[in-house]
Image (cartoon, rainbow, N blue to C red; front, side, top):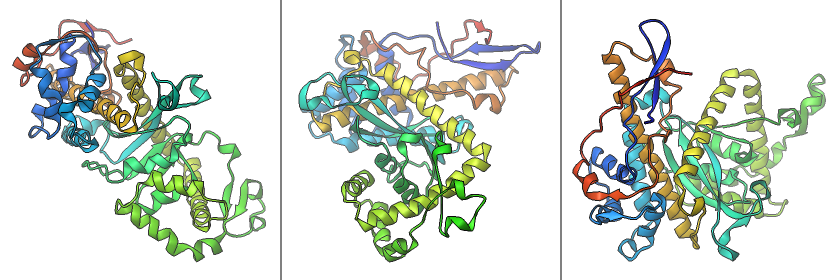
Length: 426
């Protein structure tokens, strides 16, 4: 009987914790989780009912992976008209509802986020199998690039080649994501950064923060000759080509306006620029501006331990999300069996929908647990709760028989907290 452990101060002064999340349920609980969450939020979401409502009338089904069943319904005749926006809409609704929860404000205010790619092996061979990235072994596969808010809500996901650079996909999730989140700062690891992303984020109103683990190898950029700063000369690289920036400033503004207006996807534009010859002046001007922005960020990174801590904390939340995604995507040993790009994106969106539902579900019961502790005169300080996470899954069964009649009978009811025993914190 596992649950979420919330540390609480005992009256005797010793640290203790209560296992207060609902008791481990049967396999029927997990898939019906999304439907119950959608009942809590304002009104049924268009598109989701066609995916999940038929399952409620099927009686008892065989053990299967939830993500695979979502993809099968999307690929079936009944859901032939369902497009990616129909999966994005319930994710947006769940993220907005989660953002409105008081407990979510303990983890963040919804103004920062992080993104990272996760590799999934393919179950196919040939052209539909994806690409081989030696970093992940000899099996072909795909990467799911996910954006996660500081409140643990996964608000965007994209399928990308396992061999592609992650940097072009950073802005895809930040722009026009449709939620109530007001993202102004974004964290990535070293694979999600480039000079182009630095300057485009700055021009679009985002602060881009990349984790710098190769700082000794980086050079600062300057506008004047390096000899102007003799004591800093070993740290300085090539001069900024200000003449190129000045000459092509109008060309820089036009693609930025196109990105702001949603006319073109950032990843498409950045891949197009990367495919151009080195003599492309727009690409060069963006790179020179990016070097200026990257230099300013490197100085902030050196001077601010708080910035480094916030960046690492944001990326750790993405790693927690990866662990939950790996456990959730268990059908066919976690391999992607879809052939077409649309079917692969449907599977990724279905996975993101499940994770968003788990995050919302856990958050509501964490709030109930906190309220119970306050009522028991053992309140947990917000400073302690900030280290908790709604990305836990130990209390969820990922396989089994889904009993729709029983689940439908309790769709609008809350489950009791697991108060059967007290666990001493390690």
